[in-house]
Image (cartoon, rainbow over all chains, first blue to last red; front, side, top):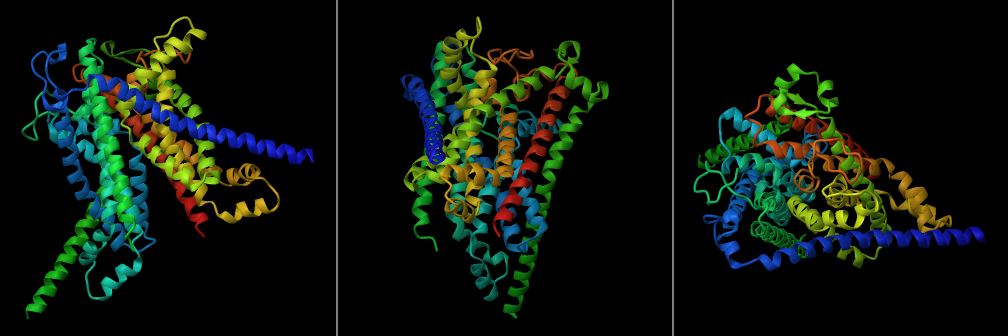
Length: 284
Length: 303
């Protein structure tokens, strides 16, 4: 009898601990969001999102963060286009052309799983060595390339996940009607478009928030670049650089920038959730 | 005739598409090799002058005098990673067990999106949170009980921030492993009169141990490479930390902090690229091993 009671008590204790652990994780998320909002909201104003830095900005004078916001968008859009151009063909190839238990497909999947774990600072450093080798300076183009390297594994892994789940019968049906493999690409793409959207939102969220990859490659500037060869400011670096300033007004802007970045990332995450919910209803 | 020409066109297009895609796939596989080679190429100058052992065990870092000892940075990285994993492993394990074995679907529906949000928060925002909350907490509340003085910018702050950052990765791999376990195993144990917890302890955890270990290795390698957040809260003093309230200087932070001046001092860029190469090789190996373990588990359970 005692034995039975002990195992009941043990069960209760561990269940309690588990609930506490889960609550701790949830609460820490809220603590982070509350800390960012509480510090960032009072120093937010319209100038932050509508103006670029003017003279004396880094001494606490007029201006805003438009250069960093636009710069981050440029980088993320550029690398998204490039990233999709690389990852869609790769995913389609390993799923459409290669047989089910192909070694090449397995190796490709493994290698992108591994590349997914490579930290962004390594991509930044690698991008930098290439830039030095080619004699390029830090620029929008270099930033886009570095972020592209960072998001390709994310895109490939998450698109592969959905393409893999397309029913084999669908492929077979199209092929038996006389379509070539490249002609059924569109059928597959239409079927997995919600999944691709999720992958896009995921990689945009990762790309827009990453500082270490653009630190070496994109540089920093107060103006909005007009060509691919010019340096470009990004939101994460705006936070990082301005936070190290001793002047309170400049630090305030870093907190405002952190709030903007957090809101962008939250919006992307919510959009992804709503989007998948909407489309998972009428999936076959 | 026209039909025939159209079909030829289709065949040519098929050929072109197939081979473009194949070559893209092959090129992508070489990518990791290219990264490794180019980082090695850049770090070769310093490796020619000093042995790798000398560099790794040296503890003075004076680039101007040509002294590059990586030991303090390696210790900084190890300390921060160890604290992060010690903090988050129990949390993640308990929480993953709860979510996959006990929790009502409604609770899962509530918690999973939150873990996703936690995963989506950019590193630099974690760093800001570290400065706003963790650093003051350590310097004002925690450190006075243990040491005379701490600015709060310490390896403990880095470890806490990093610990939270690796939670989403660790917990989601844990949950995946638990859900890959065949339900029959649990039922067999429960039908013999074991409680839920006994089943978890004696069956679920034991059976999924290799997977859990692989997940921890994945989380460790994520922690190794994290740069900005750690850089912002760690204090960045190039000495071996003596207590968790001391500042530390992890390898990625070293790279990120000095890229500006590295071109003007001889061998400096080479030393920094060597640290990038070290990170790359270690993390590549860790990731490859743990992914292989996870793939094997998936295959074994999917019978």
